[in-house]
Image (cartoon, rainbow, N blue to C red):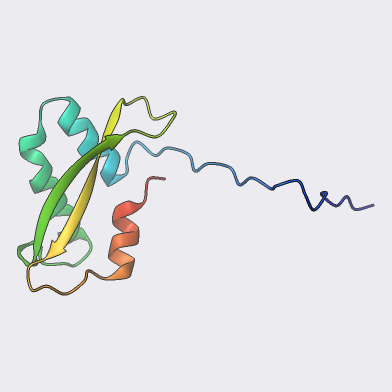
Length: 100
């Protein structure tokens, strides 16, 4: 026997679990622990791991409220901008924004 949800009842997708090893979480911890000096180097290393040339990108950091359950008050979002004016690759942006 199959059960069907009522059409007026919204179906909620579970929130993604917080991954403390994601780049965003690592950068946020660096800022909280006073090691923000090394954040740019960490992002450059991450770009090299993804076969990208870090010298082609400007790296910006933006503070925003942390997601619930992360154990942080605020998180630091990494933004990349290409120096040549082109948009960054969609797959690279998705990898960068990944929190889980």
